[in-house]
Length: 159
Image (cartoon, rainbow, N blue to C red; front, side, top):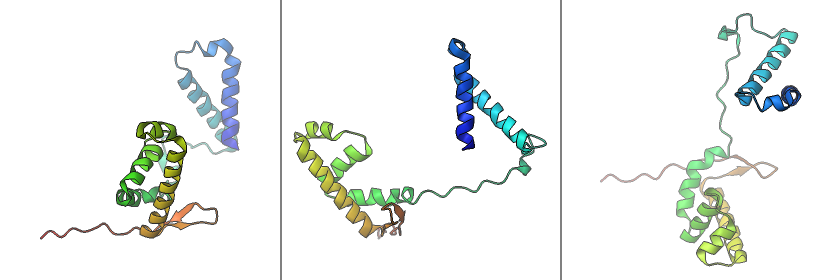
């Protein structure tokens, strides 16, 4: 890949600096400058360099990237998580969303590690089943989320 080649060239130039690289005022800025120059040289060699660097009309318009299907589930996930049993929601929030280890959770809750692991596994299965039902999650052939049908938000009666 071109990007990998440019990255490798940039780091080779950094390595060639030897101890002098560590003495640079801003090594990060230096690396960016080297990478930018390498990209400019490549584009110049391919005849792809813009005639006027500030002429942005020549650049192709970037399409706004659609979020990955799994990212679009956040609203549904929040709603379904609140509908789970409190014990399931507690372990999922702690271990899946807040980054707490299962060991730390087990110690904080006075559980054995194997009991906490089993509880987390059961909670994940219940969450997955509930997401599939409530959000009509579709999976591709590899088991990854390929889409879902969001359910409408619950309306409250103002009267």
